[in-house]
Length: 321
Image (cartoon, rainbow, N blue to C red; front, side):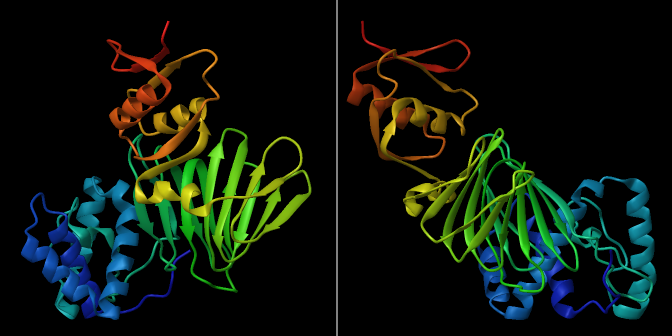
């Protein structure tokens, strides 16, 4: 579905130019400072957010030479009326992320976008409605906005959602059979196979397990586990549960086997635990996501484990014999 055609504003043209400049291989500190100064104006900030959204929505089409010719042809025609650039380069050239019509306006895509992170990567995404999503390692989400509903499909991984209030358009996150609905809320959703964890930081969310008729409403500071059996709600340390969004892992009396599993989420070369009888030993500490060496050093010194490196790049933690 497309929105009504409208004129391109000066802020949007400037936003497109800034997006292109910031996408260059080398960006000076002066350029970054100038950009932040320009973005202090609310209208400019809104325009830049919209440009980023369209860029993300259409980036997969940027290498299509036919599309490039079509967009450039339209821009050439509209440039006579609007003063817009007469030529654009697809790729990092951000103006190619807009589809301009002959009348000089934008036709927005229907809001379907896919965002993903690789192992060890995190990413923040600003959505068209002003909401934001922070993706954790190895995560994939699909955004489907319509006039009546804002739908996010969490296909795998974990994400932190900061939702802009819109009573007329519920914000819904689907993770397998679990559906989380919020209006204006900050909450975390993690999908682990057939189970889903929902942690509420602020606001309120309704959780429904499809096909099972189970539902629950969470209060801030609560976590819900949806999987086999009834929904389970418990209290949670919100700061620790969402510390990943700040690039940290917080372990408080965490079983060694669980801590290793959490560390490995951010690694392509994992930690292998070979310590029978010590798997449930408590681990405490704060580590940067992806900092394998710091975790291995702390675990080995605290629990008396031996460290050995394999040829495949993995590190083994073994009980001393």
